[in-house]
Structures are given as structure tokens and as C-alpha cells.
Amino acid sequence: MQSTNEKESFRFTAGEMKEIGYKVIDSIVDHYTNLDEKRVHNLKRKEELRPYFDTEIPVRGTDPLDMIDHLNQHAFSNIMHTDHPRFYSFIPAPTNYISAMADALAAGYNVFAGHWMSGSSASEIENITIDWLLKLCGFPESGGGIFVSGGSVANLMAIVTARNTKLKGGEQGAVYFSEQTHSSLTKDLRILGISKEYQRPLAVDKDLKIDIKELRKTIQEDLNSGLKPLMIVGNAGTTNTGAVDPLNELSKVAKQYDLWFHVDGAYGAASIVTDYGKNALRGMELADSLTLDPHKWWFQTFEIGCLLVRKESHLFNAFSTSAEYLEDTKSPLPSEKNYYDYGIQLTRSFRALKFYMSMKVYGLDLFRKSIKKGIEMAEYVERMLRRNPDWKIISPAQMGIVNFQYQPDGVGDEGANELSKRISEQVLQDGYALIITTKIKNRTVLRMCPIHPELTREEIDETIRRMEHFGKELVD
Ligand SMILES: Cc1ncc(COP(=O)(O)O)c(C=O)c1O
Image: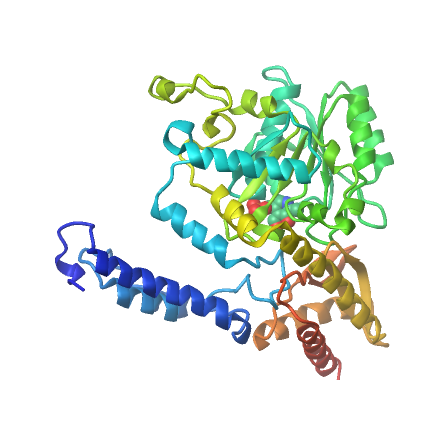
């Protein structure tokens, strides 16, 4: 390969490009095939990492093959493998190879998916894929949607759309949501200048679902004091416990008070393709808008989130734009829409491709089976933990998530909180699995979300065995 030190242009020969490409593919294939054998994470401190990456501005070039070797050795090995089968924390990100290759294609062709003129087939593939999701989620024909970077942005856009639809210019309105709602919502409210005065985090019931009585009472109090209610946000699977708010009831309250009804199904909405999800998510189809993240339980690579709306025109009214330099991009045919009119970005990548390609290659049935397996694996974890009375189930398996504590006889509540932290630290150090803590009803608990389709029961047994071993050692 010609030395990149002396390069006069960005071009490589076809042979060089293939050589670089093959090395990239070899690295990715190695990642996919050997992941199970690797530690789940390698957390390095900043001072350890820094020396690996030259901090000087690189005025002269470097050999790309050496560069890839270096990155494999020092960058990709020093991360948490969120796609590892035994990564049980946050919302794990098990991906699929087709999705990764689709990203490479979309980047390689550098498809501009912002308007019909430049990315007509990208727009059409996005239209088709959004239609699949609308159908699967039970939304009407009038519906629409858009792929975005993730759930945080989808929730933000839902608030913007609600505000644009329900409020007159300059008006403010209150937003109602359970205290178990994902932190992105309050961040979004803050970004949009919706102050605390208009934020209504509501108490949850014993199952950590929004308390409908409390909701009605709060709306009524706001009305009595002259404050306008704007929207209700329901959870279709909270991040903490997988709890689903009573969506049918929320929809009724929203209708009664003429409020926007948004559902955050960033994680849980994918389960709608299973019988479990169809039952648990009743009422989700009544939402005015729905956040759903393909980069969570649809096994897609980052970043792909999605906002669906009941009426596509609501999205258009909230986000459409025009400028003299965009005039020529307007098609005379309304069906040839410009996605810049439906979201925040003008320049946007071809996110739809990975979802489209992986659905086409694998088929919906495989997604259904894989999601169902995740739900069952969390139930399996719960069953296995219940065999030993030293484990206390704090929130039972639901929507693929289970929370628990190690609390043998003689260990008080404070001691159990401390043990959760210490066991999690030991698991982290051990590297076989990754389990971190969260707080539920003031208890510090261990949380598992075992949704990787290739995870085995034996791996779960071994994970529990190791946690028990660490727990025992800490108590003795
Ligand atoms: C329920 C829920 N909503 C929203 C988000 C935010 O999504 P993202 O991280 O894709 O922005 C998450 C992330 O885990 C989530 O679990």
C-alpha cells in the first residue's frame, strides 16, 4: 500500500480499498464469532487509555491497516460489549450482522435521506419500514413516523408535536408522567424550556405503574388553578422494571381532558409482536405518538430510534420547513415526501436501511421468537433465584427485566443494599457477566435484562452461581 504519509488525494486504489475493507470485515467477523469468549467489559481508567491514542494533531497520515490493528488492540477491546450475550445491564444491545453491514452500505454510498430528490429509494424504504411498524403497533392508516437517533430524540419530538397540535402560540401546558419514566423525558422537557412548574412526575402504585387516581386528581387541580394540561406520557416497559402503565386507562383520561397521549415504548414496544406483548401493551395502539427504538429490542446497531404518530399530518405541521434553496426538492406528488419536513434533521443518514434489510433477511418470525425468548429468560432467572431463599425478588420478571437482592438471614435492609453494590462490583471485576444496580422503592437492587437471543440457560446458571459465590464471600 502506498504510504499515506505522501498522499496527494483522499483516493485509494481499488486494491487498497479492498484490502482496508477486508481488514474491517475480518475485525467485525472476529467480533461476532468470538464475542461469547470475551470478557463482557474492560473498563480502563483515563490515564491508562490516553497513551494509546496519540494526542497530537496528525499532520501526516498513518497506514490504515496499522491503524485498524491499533484500534482493535486498544479501542475496541477497551469497551463494554453491550452486544455480549451476558451483558444484562441497562437495555442491552444485541445486534445482528446484517444491520452492521447495512450501516456500511449506507455510509459507503453516503445516502442522503433528508429529501426525496436526493434519496428517493431511501425515502421509499423508510416509508415502507415505518408502515410495517405502524401496522405491527396497530396504528391507523393516517399514521406516520420517522427514524431518529434514539428514544431521547423521539420523546423530544413527541413533546414538540403535542405542543404544536394542542397549544396556541406562546401557551404552556403541563406534562403528566410517572416517576418511573425514563430520564430522557425530563431532560427533553428541560431542553424545550418546559419548566418544573409544568412537569408533573406522578406517584406509582405498588407495581410501579402510574397511579390513575393521582393522575386524575392532579389534572383536576391544575385545571382548577388555571394551568392548562398538555399531555400524558405512558410507559410501555419502564427501564427499571419493565412495568407497563395502564395504557387503556391513560388513553381514556387523555380523551376526557383532550390531552395528547404519548407512549414511551423505546424498549418494550417491540414485544408487541409476541402474544405476551399483545396482552401487556393493550392500549398502546390508542396513543397519539409512540417512541420505539429499533436499536434496543429490534436487534439493530446504534443509532436508530423511531417516533410513530397516529396522524402523519401532526408531524408535518410540527416540523415542516421551507427555504429558497429547498424549493426544487418539493415534489408535486404528496406521496414523495421529504423527511426533513417530518423531523429535526435536514441531512440525515439512511437509518431505515438496516431495519429494512434485517427484517427482509431474517423475517419477522425470527424477531418474534428472539423477543419471546428474552421474556422467557427473565422468567427463568426469577425461577432460578427463587430456588434459594437468600435471594429476594424485588420486582418479578416482566418485559424481560427482573430485579433482586441478596439477603440471607441476619442481613438487614441496609446490609442488602450494600451487598447489591458489592456483588455488582465483583461481577464487574470478574468480567464473565455485567450486572449493575438500580434503585427500586428505596432499595439498591441487582437488575438483569437477559434479552440476548444467543444467551443460554447454562450461562444464566453460571451467572447466578458466581453472584451467589460473591455474595457468600462478602457475608462471611
Ligand atoms: C424507556 C426508555 N425511553 C427512552 C430511552 C432513551 O433512549 P436513547 O438512549 O435511545 O436515547 C431509553 C433508554 O434506555 C429507555 O429505556
